[in-house]
Image 1: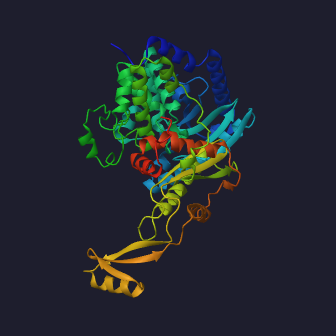
Image 2: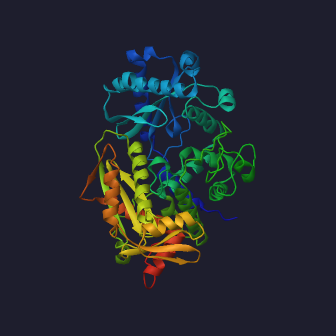
Image 3: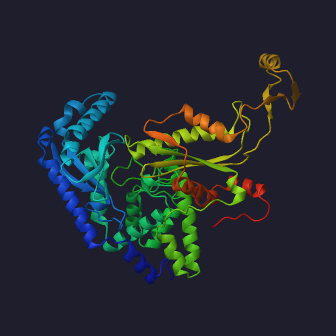
Amino acid sequence: METLLSDNVRKRILAEVTPSQKELDLQKTIIDSLKQALSDHPRSNEYSYSFIEAQGSTGKKQTQLRGAADIDLFVGLKPEAYTAILDKPHKKRHQDLDHLMSNMVKDWFTPAVTELDTTNVQRAFSQHPYLSLKMMDLEIDILGCFDIDSTTLSEDGPITAVDRTVHHTHYVADLLTDEMRDDARILKSFVRASHAYGDQCAVGRMGITGVSLELLAIQSDTLDDAFDALEQLDSIPIDPLKRSLKELRKNTAFRDDYIILIDPTDHRRNIASSFTPRAYEWVKYRIGRLRDASKNSNEDAVSNILFESSIPTEALPEWLAKHSFTREFKSDGSKHYTILRDKLYRVAKKVQVSLQTERTGEARFGETLVEVYFEEDSFSVGLFIENPEISEHYVRRGPSIDLLDAAGEFRKSHLNVEAKDGFLWTTEERQWRDPQKLADTVLEDSPIQGLERVSKTSGVSQKVLNVLYRYILPIESSFLEKMTRVKDGDLEIPW
């Protein structure tokens, strides 16, 4: 029976993505140095904790990729020492936990690492504050969590969201065979090659996480089965309790989730709940491309689909360029990239809504695609617009003629009103006819602390346009159909 990857391709991929012993030794050295610095710092005595351990791929699981590893160092607090906080009502408890974690970062973690060769030391925030830094070119997060047992987690849930991570590490590490570990690395390499991995996803705000791919490798007999499971995740959920999609949808916690992969350590949680639908659809699309290349026995094409390469910076085709523009920003270093990313996505959504519709609900510039991309301290918003040139006036629909009071008010407010198809209609002058000026106004009205607008764009802006062109257009069928009508002849799309 033929498989997606021939033995030759599998060996080639693993030779490239498996870390060298030198890398593993460096990671261990950094982890040991950080653990020592934290445990030796005098402020550590002010906190009651049971462990300082690396979690995630560079911890006990050892599923990291060559050249793409980061370190998550967890400090596990003893719950019994913090009952004064944990026994409080939910809102007050959350505030006090925030305060506790913030003090750990400020008074313990930060001063403890100052003697080490670190850079980019920042207070960051997810559910609670944590410390982010770089050491020997590796990204490192130092987080506080609570050391709860598996029974408490499954019955009562976590105290903080990251409490589950320790249990994920043990669950995955205990079940992974060497072959599964290799499968997990290949899956990770594929998703990274799709630029749809984790919190640095280029195709949507949040991509597919490493732990979800490790779980797919564990629950699948073969790598092909794991790809099948990933491809079908929008219709066939993965659940240790074997609940059907229909059953799971009855649960309000899962009702609106695009795909469902139930946490084996906490059956009330969907690990995939934060994944952006766009990221998943792009990964699914590329699995189809992988299958095509495999069927054609094109080993080079299969390898290229599995290996990560840079996002292109080529100029867009002329026909599409006039439908696109970008706005670029620079971080001042005061905020963690995840905070800036989330805020920029929210503002970009405002821009998208403003471009698509008039204040009265009628179409303005038509369908608009938007994406955010960032590298280091550069962030860019890219936009594709259906109709960059629009008329001076638009037809506005008013109330039903049966709504006598509303219809009367509408007639008083507008000079030229006519009745048609049971409604009142009028023609209004547009406030905006230049999409870029409108976008600039929305951006100016929604400043983001820590981000400064720059006039000179960089490769980051070219990349976000290529993300829209090469990765998003193929899965946004309605916009693609409209672009087909816009351009005469064949579309120049590199898929």
